[in-house]
Image (tube, rainbow, N blue to C red; front, top):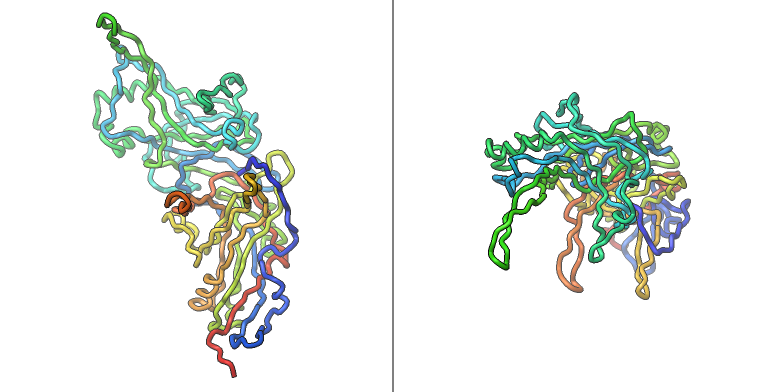
Length: 491
């Protein structure tokens, strides 16, 4: 995520320690440190982790945000994103008014996104003027809650019947600045969107169904069976170079109706014509499925084991796998020591210099490889025992009413001693593979006033295009572990 900052961007020695964050006592590797009067032997042992870049072709992606479009990075390859969605329908839905002569005027589909010039946050990645063509199809086979990004949308649609299409660019040059930057009471009134016109007959059918078959609108399940949803994609033969970060989607049915107004002067009635719309939105209550494809990533996967660099690409692309040598640790340290400190961090290189270079995710998760899918599917949060959430690589400090943002080029996991202690105790004969996964924590505030704090309630896969080059040279892969022989007695 790009940040607008009044900041000092600092780059701290990229070729310094990358994984281990040990102090000068690492020079005493394997030795016993016994200060005068201290009867507890303490140790600092050194080990080397194994790293490799791995391809993950699918991830659990229940999220309110969708991606749409195609984008190519010279290093990280090409990504295409599309999605399918249902629409929320309130129980016993009816049109708020009766359309004049029982006729609707039009129906369309809108997807909305941010504009950095308006909100400070960009709603796309890539070239904002790159043309693409959105295509929308009606879903014919009911969707199920299979929120994985390798789902095949074509199995759910009749691809011979397109509801509508439109060529678009992220910045719509047909919108004059007088509209784009118009404000009301300090707020921008324009919302960037792509609007696709549908055949009017579809809107007419929905209206008439509310009158003639109201059981289809009794509840959400009934509506999902009646109108199964839409598949939104882009034409691979037209354009590319940009991916929209879709913040919301909706289907709008427009019509006119009569309204009776009573005069405040003489009490007489008059009839006026009003315009309105019925809106079916994509909301968290219903299903939205994202489909992602990645290709041309061979450069990232060449000679992946213990390379000088390893990579992260999101979403649903490339992760870094770190293997901790538990068997070697148990052999060298035994299983009866208490691990007192194991600081662990990952350093990475700055973004590439080209104009549309992918940015790093703010945070990453360190998680056992065999827990990857279940962790996100079950909506868990990190427990600091087997799963660890890094700090944000952007640190902020406030001084004299000025906030200074510092780019640390580092994901810091703090102390992993509990993790190693558990592994040495319960599975000393098994090395453990951990994945570094880009994530987006969901937080909420609790308490009030000075006692207010933010807590993490869920961790989602990071669902924005991103790319990171982690430093995994031999020096970076060395880790230092402090431990103590707590049960030892002085002779």
